[in-house]
Length: 168
Length: 356
Image 1: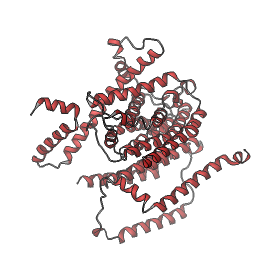
Image 2: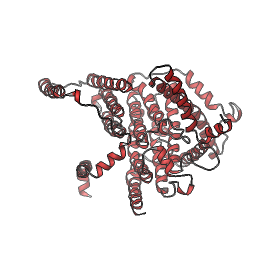
Image 3: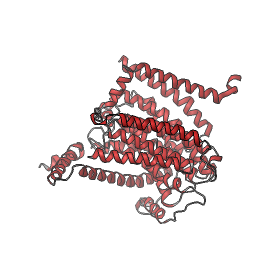
Image 4: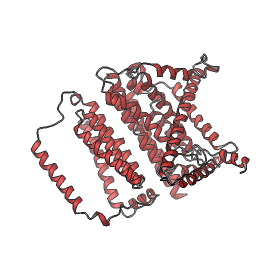
């Protein structure tokens, strides 16, 4: 009962804020609605008892990704102008690609047999379980992701440092 | 019912009478046949109101304390006109704020300008969910406790950036950007020091972290984690934009930073959030490093408040003693000094846990 109410509440929040994010004329507002949308996703995780995932969702997606987007918008002058156009001219490719994506998602939703699948609520204290799984069974993918992130970090620093770094 | 025992329980084992009362109320409610979650929602609302009242009263006291303490350090008297010892000065200020006109600057962005104070206050209000005030006196002991604190308090950056953007003023914009850069930079050493404590306790849950330190002061984490405590206080002080790290509102160059354009009640929200954050950082330091509510003789709540205000005093002392540092030094300090020390601290802690 409570879960149903919470689920539909968060689902409505996600859909409405996602729609507002697309149609908002101001790009800063779009970023704020994106944060709201991601917060709704975190709420869905809480309903499913995945507290750890919800915490990470808020910490990484809202606390880092959206904040970075807001930061960049604040630093960029021209896109804040009232009469700057938020849309580009690529109507045809956009319709084709989003149509294809929508077709894929809708056909996947229709083909899945939802009746036999029950939403699996995980155990209460799954944080320790997640950690154990990450460092035992899935240690290889975990390490590969770490190395990938490290490479991205070093790449970003070398781009920023540029030639100045090479001269020193 | 033994009245004396109840009184003892209320002070020293607060969780027990509270859960007994909840069970009694739940039983009574179930006889009416209505769904049980309505009662739970009602209790949660009551807890939220209690916390809100606590925040307001605590802010009134902590602001008075800061002004008196600053006066002590600067050899002057501080507030001494309204009420005995000037105790009602903050109340008078609050009433003044409430009566002031609410000004929206021309060409400000209404949505972000209005949302910013609420986002900032909500971020500090939310953290109170997992603060253990006493034995069992915790609003919601979720199993990701510490992660929840870091996630929710990180949301304040969105409010700060929105305040800078929405005000449509160059001082606000620069203040907002500075603050965001500062909070993001100092969050990393803070998370790493918290991680060392979490590794020692073996849990993210706040009640487990407190319980792991036991009632013996020699086992509190400020002894193995003395480096961590100092790092936490420095990074925490920078996180809440106070003390020598108040670059975002450096009045000598930025008027008042991201709160330049705010007035009346919205300004009061920023002020309330700042002092609530000061209390929260101190409460977290007391919980993580000083054994939380544990201590001999006195009731847990009293111990918790004493420890918290001890840390508050240290942070205020730092604020009124050190000069504001330069903005490029601020970033270098976080990335080149605090981060390596925090990483080293984490590594040594992990090594010692495995060896000993």
